[in-house]
Each structure stands twice: as C-alpha cells, then as structure tokens.
Amino acid sequence: LIQLYIPLNFLGVLYREIKQSLTDLDRMFTLLEREREIADAPGARPLAIEHATVRFEHVDFGYHPERQILHDVSFEIPGGKTVAVVGPSGSGKSTLARLLYRFYDVDGGRITVDRQDVRQVTQDSLRRAIGIVPQDTVLFNDSVRYNIAYGRTSATQAEIEAAARAAHIHAFIAAQPRGYDTMVGERGLKVSGGEKQRIAIARTLLKNPPMLIFDEATSALDSASERAIQGELASAARGKTALVIAHRLSTIVDAHQIIVLESGRVTERGTHAELLASGGTYARMWKLQQSGSGERSMPEQTVPAT
Ligand code: ATP
Picture (cartoon, rainbow, N blue to C red):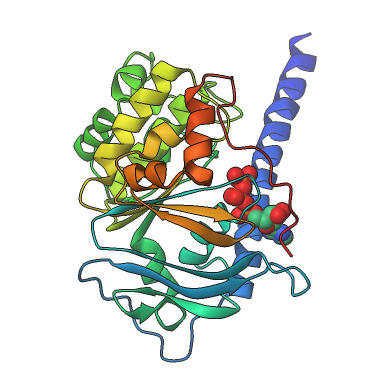
C-alpha cells in the first residue's frame, strides 16, 4: 500500500503545485495585459511628490468608446486630506480609483499629482506612491509575512510586526502556531473578510505611500468589525492624501469633502454637514442608512450611464 501511497501523494503535491503556478500565471497575465494598455510616455520622469495634491480636471472616460462612464468629473484632494466618493452601485466610483492608479488613461481632461499629469510620469513611480486597500484583497498562497511584506520586500520582521499591530491583526497572527509563517490563501488558513482587509491595511502601512486609495468592501461586516476597520483606516490615512470609495456613509462623516457621483457625474459635493443641510441625494441616503431599514449600502444604479 505504501508503494501506492507515495506516488499518489506525490501526484497530489504535484497537482497542487501546478494549480498554484497556474494561479500565479493567471495573475501575471492579467497584470501584463494591463501593462500593455498603458505605457510610459517617451521621456517620462519619476513623479516628484511635494504635497501629494491630487486633481481630477474635467475627466471623461469609458472602458469602451460606445459607453462613456465618467462625464466631466472634477475635484481636488488637497495633500494630506481625505476625499470620499459615494453614489449608487455602478456610478463609476471604483473607476476613479483605477484612473488615479493609471490602470487606464482618461479620454478627456486630466489627472494630476502635484501638477504633474499622471500620463507624463513613470508608472512605476506613480504606483509606488499609491497604496491601495481594495474591496476584496486577494491573498497570495504564501505566508502571512510574505503577504504583508509584499508592499516592501526589504522590510524587517520588526517593521512587519509594527504594521500588523497598527492594523490590529498582530494578535490574530501571533495566536497561530506558526505565527508569521502561517500559510494563507486557498491552500492555507482561511481568513475572514475583515482579517483580509486588515492584512491589506498592514501591507499598505508598511509600504507607507503618500497617497492612499481605500475601496470599502460592499459586503457588510458586522458593526463591531466595521467600527474597528474604520479606526484602522483612519490611522492608515493620517497625514496621507486619501481617496475613499465608501458604501457606508458612517465611514466618511469626517472626510474633508464628500463627492456624490451619479451616472458618472458629480451631482453634489461638500462636507457631511453641508450635504445634510442641502437636503439632496446624500441627505436622502443618510436618512435611509440611519433608519436601520437594513439598507446598508447604496441602491443599484438604475439609469444607464450613457
Ligand atoms: P460599486 O459601488 O458596485 O463598486 P462603482 O460605482 O464603483 O460600483 P464602477 O466599478 O466604477 O462602479 O463601474 C462603473 C461602470 O463601468 C459600471 O457600469 C460597470 O459595469 C462598468 N465597468 C467597470 N469595469 C469595467 C470594465 N473593466 N470593462 C467594461 N465596463 C466596466
């Protein structure tokens, strides 16, 4: 039996290795495909950061020419401040983040960081300056240490731990028998949505970029986890220029400015108090979410963005 077991076991290992390699390849091709769309302009220079002030100026954009998604979108995130974007599902909020990270180029208008058009600087320098905490973090099939240090591979164990502590995930990791060597991802320890997001926050804290994009998860966390994540987010965003894509309005009451996006157009802007006072879409959304009617996130976009 042992003679049969060894080859079978070997085949099992081999199968998992191949599957893992395919996952990695898949990820690589997705990245390569994106790279192909966007290239450095001839003579592109590294981004020079002074205050990390971000400006969207009359931005038009569509993934396909026949369907424009963003229409004449303009706003500024002053260096070190947080601007939050809210609006119905499909209104174009995540698209703003993708354009700032330059996964795509705008069709009209421009996006600048400290007055430099993002199309004129090297992609590498732009992306190094931005930390993203995405809606749904994909963890690599590797150790927790690798997953956190991914943002800065030269980080020491002490730095990794400090980032994990700040993201309130250290105690969870330390409680695992293998600590930071615990494997996560499909093959390893199953982690909850909140824990994944904390690992992503730790990764971003370690990278310590001047700009931050936080794409809040649509899936509702329980309110205790939600409040905890909000606290961790606030500490991650302190002093950084942050674009927060929010689904729950309670997350963003302190934002420097809130932008309401509907069908790819900015329809309202102001602070939480100003928007409540003006009695528009934001005020209606706020009432709806406060009423505890179970409506925790925005309704679906009903008007097609044409
Ligand atoms: P949600 O709140 O549900 O995350 P959102 O406001 O972030 O939504 P986006 O993800 O920016 O919305 O999408 C805006 C529109 O662009 C949607 O109609 C969506 O279907 C479309 N879209 C998004 N990504 C692509 C893509 N890669 N190719 C084509 N269309 C896309």
